[in-house]
Amino acid sequence: MKKQDVDVHVGKRLRLRRTMMGLSQEAVAKAVGITFQQVQKYEKGANAMNANRLYEFGQFMHVPVAYFFEGLDHGEAATGFSEEGEKFEHSVRRVSDRESLEMMKAFKRIKEQIIRKRLADLVRAIADHKVILD
Image (cartoon, rainbow, N blue to C red; front, top):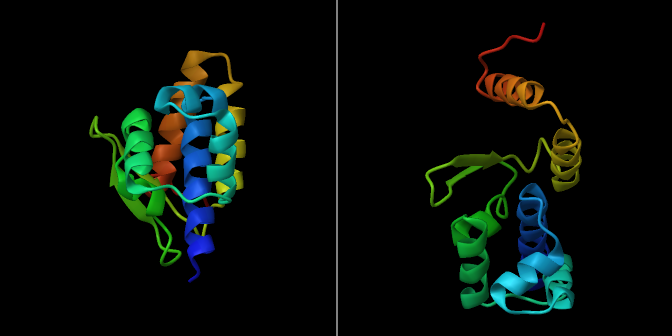
């Protein structure tokens, strides 16, 4: 694996988490004291992040630094925990970052809170194999 591959992967994970949090590149940049153009470069993998910068992003986005590297070595599911103890899981083989982003954007367009809650419960149940889809 080339260094550029790692930078691109880390950038995709940064973009995924930023989008899932509903944040703009400008908001993230301001929070860590850089320009939004630099965030763009990180997200595209054009620039590599040092350990300190990864730590700052992790702190701001409430994920461990390891989150940015999950799924890098293989396509199996990777699990992590945020500082609040929230479990999150991403599968590189089954769901692309693009699909995750599209799902999150569509979910955020649902205005009715009860529908959002029930949909989230359904997705969790499916993911935990508590619902049979035959």
